[in-house]
Amino acid sequence: MSIAPTPEKIFGIGFGFWGAKALLSAVELGIFTELAKRPLDLAALTQKVGLHDRGARDFFDALVALGLLDRQNGLYANSADADLFLDRAKPSYVGGLLEMANARLYGFWGALTDALKTGKPQNESKTSADLFATLYADPDRLLGFLSAMSGVSAGAAQAIAAKFPWRNYKSFVDVGAAQGMVAVTLAHAYPHLAGAGFDLPQVQPIFEEFAQRSGVADRIAFHGGNFFSDPLPTADVIIMGHILHDWDLAQKRMLLAKAYDALHKGGVLIVYEALIDDERRHNAFGLLMSLNMLIETPGGFDYTGADCQGWMREAGFAETRVEALVGPDSMVIATK
Image (cartoon, rainbow, N blue to C red):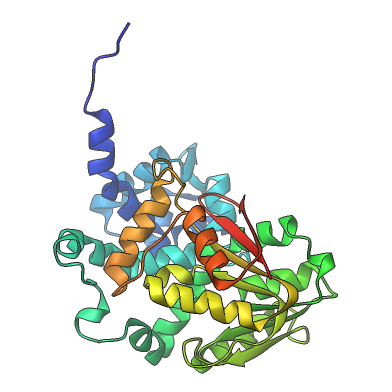
């Protein structure tokens, strides 16, 4: 018996920004951090986060309905997921990425139609020719961006540490290391590894502070440079996470060739992204991420595992394979 079509899915997608903005505002207001300390009633929570009485109850109850908060006997508390991942005081906090989405991406995505019509970025690039130069010139904006990169990389870093045979290798370089989430995670998991992060020189103090705070400053080094104009540091394993999608096809191929040149014989390149599935039907997050690259960059785009393996073979790599990581992320592994 056929089921009659309904507009439920259409409305769910079309009004999805309502729930998204409720979550982003809750992160901005620090609601989950406050409730991680202790449950609070309506009046106390309203006062703690500085809301007007008119919208507070509906806002908090919407978060309950979205599964982000719980309410028992008049007291609001975090859901298990929110308590683990959205409390700024916990090392598992991933809200940095959501903070960036709130501060930057939410507004820029309002111009998606313009991006689709023009093929041009809709972010800070409208007033500056170089997005990354703009981000990296402002210390506060840079820290926010690098913290966001830690949030988006945390789960993948744990999965890469667990799934790749690191005991067979002695050294690694994380290219585009940002704050250092991947390098720190690997250093914690494998004391025998000599690790390094490679990024623009402005990143060095933020990388080193994060490594120091994480207790591995004596185990990982920072190499400053520009991967377009400078050679990459040599290593047994080179990692590129959420890097290739920033660039056009010619730049992608150039970076893969640089990685090949920098690897020791028998070395391995790991590229991880929210890879689009080869049939381009299922990983909606990866496809939407590619649209985000349309909004954010002059030529960047996301790609399938098959695409990446083809470019790797063009660069000279002999063996390639794709492995799922966590959520929408997968890694492409290539051996020299």
